[in-house]
Length: 333
View: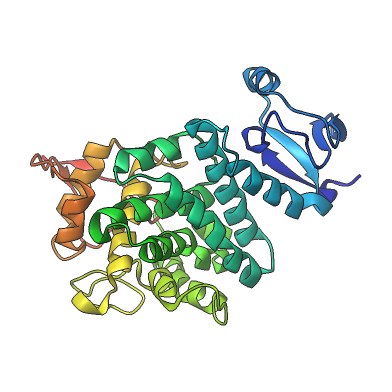
């Protein structure tokens, strides 16, 4: 069959020790070869063996895409799963869902379906932000934009639990807004999104349109609340009015948008990109502390990390955006 008849999934994202509801194939010398047939079982030992041999992906027939997503969802609900397995399936489900959101045309239906994934995250994450870090560490992906959306959702839920407590509706909204926050990048040229160097003026102007593109894509999507849509539109706004796309200030920016702004920058700084290494959490917090006067809500920032580092040994140029391609810092002095 042609390549378009199959879609790739990360090898770790196929649930183990359960009868498969579809065939799973390998790509061998340009041909798709069935590895496990429907009703066969992929054992954890066999999966570990394949990972050790360097295998990266399985392939599933395009006609079974919805079944694959449902299988992952069902696997998350198993009572016998370890915390690591449950976390991995949640992360993989969210990653594959975001991949579909960015690559498939039916954005409205997929955006509405996001709520179930976010509920799984809310139910899994504890109030300790280290639990969120642990969840994200269970699975790392090469596609920065997709993985970043999942990470921001996880961080947003964790921060919101500290700020608003256990109000599940608010936590769901925080997570959904975080998951969808960069959806508008679907409408931005990939050459701009993936550019390794600093953006020129016209490229930066186009990049700054992505929050407005996101709102446009979500227009009429009833299952995404207006508050979650505000996160999509406002996650790059700053308290001092220097953000975009509308230059909002202070109380005109929703609380959940302020939370997402912190989650967005922290993940951008602590994630490896093609043009930069990942920062340590401490260094990222130093950078954010340098940015924070006027940029981040100081109360939420304190909730994010109880002990703010006092050693400010970095320089951050005025107007720079850690989420933009080409962002870099230098040591003070």
